[in-house]
Image (tube, rainbow, N blue to C red):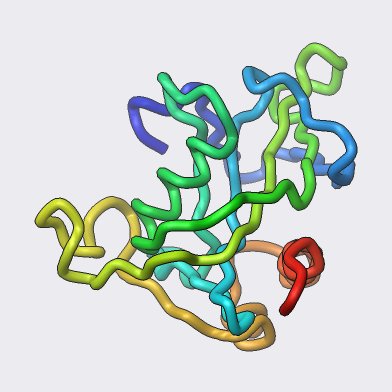
Length: 173
């Protein structure tokens, strides 16, 4: 979370928040979207993962002030966390959250997107900064099973579903 996040969503210990996968047929108004998660695939089907303090994870984060599309947030997050550029992005799914309350006007959303990596920027090259800037300590390019086995930041079954749904969205893997 940074000062430029549009909406702060830090789940406190003991706080109960419900997340509901509502599929990809509905994209909420952008102002209701708090976060974007990205599943970046190489052409040979490997995932580019971020190495964070909490362990291996997918790149993603909060929508920031001044961003106007999910794609803009997704592209910024993958550049910050794993230093790759992506081709066409596809919507994988929308996940509804009752973090701010359960009334319809209080619901917010996390959007999951996927795309193929176009360029992997060397760790030591990006505006003179190393990959170890921002919150990421680097990247790992691994297969789905290896990623899920190393994933500790949340529910492994939910993450496996997200990654497999993303893989299905991209033809040719």
